[in-house]
Figure 1 (tube, rainbow, N blue to C red):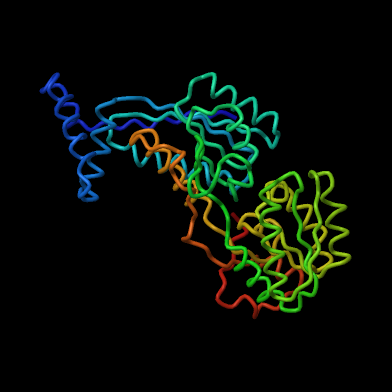
Figure 2 (figure 1 turned 30 degrees about the vertical axis):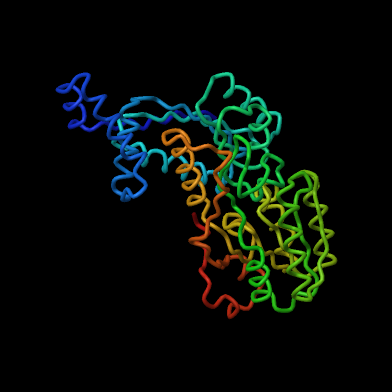
Length: 358
């Protein structure tokens, strides 16, 4: 899938200025940008004006290649937020941004091919949406800036030195939800949970990272747990069947393979009346009982703002800390699943009911 979006907005006032002033307009903009750059006491408005002047002076078209690991509502929202941030940032600057969005359909080989194509094309920046896409991009280039999104832990993915100081050409925004609060939610919604099945894909290192956090917090809560892993989608049915035979609750972190196969999970857990606590909203909409999820749109937007700072303001990804989304984290539940498994609705007090029709 390929989509090209061009955000080009040039005010008529700026066109007139450039026409009237000729070569002096360029010099004036450059002087303004320089003054803004050296003034540490600039106001927010002055900083914004400096950004606009810098972009206008260049009059450049920036090319951004986007690798999305697979089509899924959460990843789609992250890409949407990323593009929206850059469109907003470039609005009225006179410069343009062109997106080349490629979907890898969940195949690592496709991620690698797409990343190599972006490098060959000489793109100004690569956005990698999800872990496999990020790993492929990082392996393809050590020079072109890479901004990731929908990545739980960049260090675990093996692409940076630390989340505080990446040290490489890679930075981005994380989709790490507060796992401790998710386990607290599990205790509230499933108060009689005696053994929790922690279900994830063994091929996703960031799922293992979250699983270990969940185990830590379940231990602190005095709740038994057992890991159940599937190497790929073909194993999910058998793994979930085994899990519900031994556990009375299932916890699934933000895992792309599981997210793309929640219908399989639902078709096994709902008839057995086993509650599923998910790490992400769209997973819960498809087959979970409850979730505590970040906004993937907000996360993608934050990544887009980072990309702008790299492209226009000259920031170095190696020194840009990984960003975390702290807003719009809301406990939610799926009323359809609750009804289907006959759950006590009192436990959902102060929680938001998901609209499963969307």
